[in-house]
Image 1: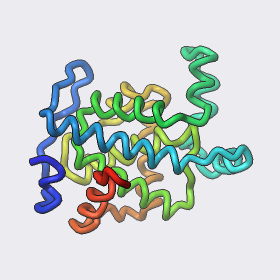
Image 2: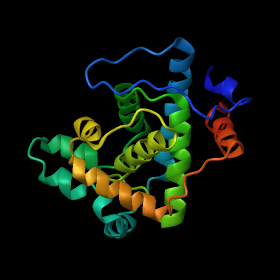
Image 3: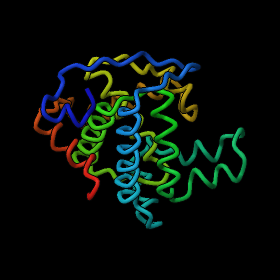
Length: 208
């Protein structure tokens, strides 16, 4: 069942293969098209939400604390100067899509996980008054996906998996950030069928 079909019968549980860091399985054509379309729309939403004002960024980094990648990127000797500049600058839509596509393929994320992750991420941003910055949107999206997979009962993305995929953070740091994320949303992670359905319609709307 593809996500468009699921709009009329939202699944309570969906099968999801466990993450394999080496082998990437190919999804069915309709699922690939659906996932690619979602990635494009999610990238557009993230891009439009990222704050670019220098004063806002400076203030936001203080509020975000452990979620900020700024200092980690600057101190990472494995990155070249050009790579550091690219990670810290305001991302383009193309850059966001490239990152999301890579993350989705490696972790074999299905469309329903992406929709639920965006709902949880939006809840976190609303309840924390935290904003997306050029150096925070990646980790916040990754955490939303990890929590979503836990809640939905899918195969778990362990902290070691995430550290392998996104080595800026160590496994223990992912756990600490997840705890803060959960406390911020007060562990209220339930997503009603109607809420899920409305987000599906929004994210799959070609005229959005």
